[in-house]
Image (cartoon, rainbow, N blue to C red):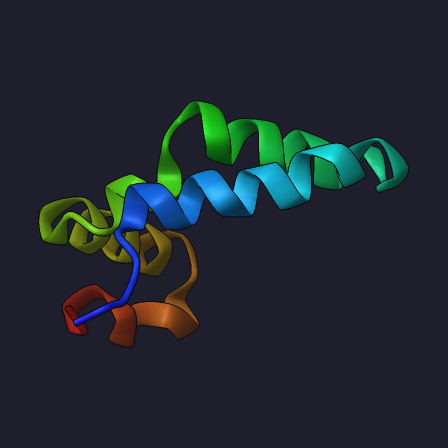
Length: 71
């Protein structure tokens, strides 16, 4: 059992990351903006969402086919 809840961990992580983003490359800033807005980390904790992501990755990258059924 984790010592900290996922929402608390994500809040703490965002508080550490956000102030430093201005000094990072623009593509990294865009990625972070997307991840936070879409609640990607929280959604990956949901089995159905993670399975869908892995299947999508596998469908776009033939070498990643093993991911489709890995979860």
